[in-house]
Each structure stands twice: as C-alpha cells, then as structure tokens.
Image (spheres, rainbow, N blue to C red):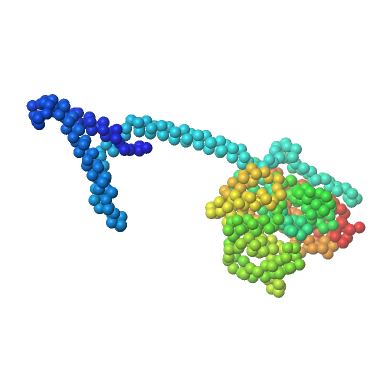
Length: 464
C-alpha cells in the first residue's frame, strides 16, 4: 500500500474527468461538426475516447521500448525517462482510511509498551532493595556469651541499642578462603555509607590475635576450626568479627581467592604498575605456586593479578616486602583499589552481568539477589575518591609464647572504628568489644572483658 500517491489510479481518473467536464464547450457554435452528430456532448466524449486510445498506445510503445536492448554496462537503449504525474500527490479516500487505521494501531502498540515499561520498572524497583538491618527497638542484635569454664568470670559485652542506628549505612565482612585448610587468610570489614557516598574497608591481618577458645588464636582460625568441629564456620567467623567491632555486621560474603581471577578476566584485565620482578616457585604448596611477573606498568590478566596478590618472596630472596605481611597487605589493597576504580569505568558496565554470575556461583553470602542489585547500583555511583582502604593498627612482629602474631593496638583500633566503621550515633568503647593484646610474649594480657578465652595458657604448644 502506498500512503502518499500509491498507484493513484482512482485519484487521477476522478481528477482528470472533473477537469475535462469543466472544460467542455458550452455550445455548438464554435464546434466543428466533422461529419458527425452536431451534439457537442457526444462529440466531446468521442474525442475523449480517442485520446484514451492514443494514450494507451503511447503507454504500450513506452513499455515496449523500456524492455529494449541492454548494452551490458547497465544502460538500456530506447527507454524513455519515467514520468511523474501531478496526481501522484493525491491520496485516495481508501488510502486515507487505511492510514488512519495504521496510526491507530501504532498508538495502541505504544500504549501497551508504556504499560509494560511501567510494570517492569515497578517490578524492578520492588526487587532491587537494601538488606534488612536491625531497626529502632529491634531484637536482631545478638550477644556473645563469654566462656566461663576457664576459672575466670566472664562478662558479656554491652550491646548498643539499635535505635541509635544511622540510616543508609550498611556493614559487612568479606573473607577470602585459601584452598588449603579453609583458612580465611583475607578478612575485610567494610562500611558502606550510601548517604555520604563513602565505602570504607579495613583489612584484618590473618595472624591478628583474637580472643577465641582455640589453640591458635588467630583471625584465620574461627572458620576452619568450627567446620572441623561440626559447626557451620560462618557463625564462628561472624562472632569473632562482632568481638572486634562491638556490633554484628549486617551481611557477609565468603569467597575463594580464585574467584578474583575470574572477575579480572571478565573485566578484560586490570592495569597496574608492578614494583619489582616477581619470581617465586613453591611446588609444595596446594595449589603449587609458579609466579613470574616482570616489573612495570602492564595489563594483568586474572592469573597474574592473583599471583601478584599471593607473592611473598623471590626464589633467590632478593625481592620481598621489607615490612613483611603488613607491607604485603598494603600492596594487596592497592591492587584491589585498582580493580575497584577500573570496575567503575563506563566501559565495564556491560561486564557487570558476567561478574554477578561469577559472584553468585562462587560466593557464600546472606545477601539476596535484590540486595546485590541494590549495592551494585549504589556502588556505580561512587567515585574512586569515595573508597578508602586501611589496615587494622597493630604490632606486626608480635608473639605469644613464641608463636608469631599481629598484636592489635586496641585503643587505636577503637579510634579507627568510630571514625570509619561505626554505624551508630553513639561511640563504641572498650566495653563493647571483646579483645586481647600482649606485648611481652604472653607474660601479661590486656583484655577488654577481663578474661582470655580458654585460659591464658590455652595457646598452641602451651595448653594445660
């Protein structure tokens, strides 16, 4: 169907006939008889029939000549140029009616699409939502009972009233598992202040001294120890994090370090300036280590990104971190910062569905699909200046009964918690946390709750 002119047969016929009727002679005085009827009207229609016949003959000649000989170069000899009639601009009544139907159908289609769009938007808005957190006067806050079987009277930590909770602030812990022994060698506590556009992250070194009833009182021990004794691991880890913060975090995620490799590959790599040659082979580890990365600014694929995070010391001992694990953690934080800032670029938005798929298939978390979508949406609004990495303050080369530990500086830690990780409007104090420290190899202990879990001699090699 042609909306503007089409083949125009009916329209042209009607228009031409009207013009011809208007131009008919009014009388026979100036009309040549030519041996036929003297009636002007009859002679007029006879002339019109002759003209139609001549017009058909001309059209036949044009059709015949238009199918003439083709020279082979795309030119047809004998063809007349296509003519355009004024009636081509005329739209018949049937075509106008059909056009109105088409417009009506288009309007209905657009209306249906609009309704569907509104429905989908409303559905997505109801699906993307923040996680539930303890509200004012809620009963969700948990209390950790102190052990009482070691001869020391336990005192439960104070629990902050949840009605002092700030709005649009969420706390979490992310723990990275190694493949050997299920140790949580990476533990990052975070607070996402959506209202302020701030994401604060702090690394708790794996050898940090924590007040748990275990032979090895280290941060990487609660999870595997609980599992080895029939527990779920997650509860023990969250209890330990609560002891350090003075409140239970809102959500958690436990992930194998190899998932980072898949995420980096999904992003197409991460650019970073490697400070020195990294050559380290440790075939006895599980999995075996074989790291060979040259110094300099380069695009790291997933494997080299993870290898750079794992690197400790070169084969010949010439390259390592001068300040041990603390400096290594700082390097890891810088790597993760590069990953975070490059994830925020516009070009990586299309990669987010793949990253989400990787995370959902590889991470143990209490977040729902909608929670993750909510955080992802808010995360994309952050600038790189809104993300801060830090490390728990402590003595990196401490010891307890000659076993290596990172000894926390409790008071400095509380300052950091209140400045960067406190979701409440009231201050967190020693009364709210359950922490221990020692700076003389265990001769004396600084405890916030007046006890050492399992007893002061309940350490590896010194359990009586």
